[in-house]
Length: 281
Image (cartoon, rainbow, N blue to C red):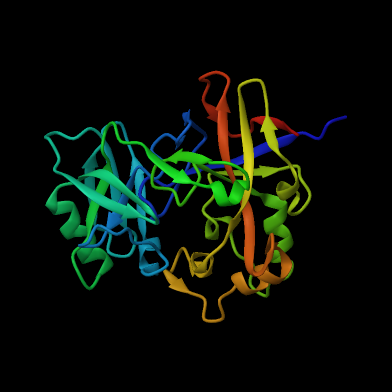
């Protein structure tokens, strides 16, 4: 009998590198889950910033209601609202995420001032969203090996979905003095039913509604060392150092892999739900 894989947890991260939201269900698009990485914070030159440089970004939570994105500081108790649909035209500008220059809309100055104050950055920051009609295409040809391969996504690092395996986290934690939660790895989907790190050896997760194609292991960075409750980095760079030894990237023993980058083929428009079952190929 084929092994059944269960979707155990489902997350979106409306603002790149801020705290995510756990959901019971979500709308799936080819560019990612609805509202996932729809906004990002940029420096005065328009370059994106993340917890790599500012681990205190982990302290800002996000929430979405019918009308607003709400960003809150769990330490100060302060919050600010950003309309999901702009109430007036937003200024257009350019922002950069990795190698991609994107056409974006800048949220109002009050949001930028609030974020600068909460994050205590050395210069003013701004919150931007992707401009309507602009499509970000990420060149992933090096990972696919043959031909030209471009992936469409919002402000995610390189792929629209990140799928993690609960058994892999359990195995990692068996090698750590202080276990870490899944939020260190910021996945969209957490699955159960596979052996540890078996996600790197399968091609797809499939059911009657949708197919997720697992494209390439996710190379992990220093963000995995950030305590998402405290907004501070581990002094010994754990769990990254242990993960490098336990599960290195293909052809690079000095880098760690955890979870799989994925794309999607949508068979119908049913929402993706926690508890949903898949078979793998």
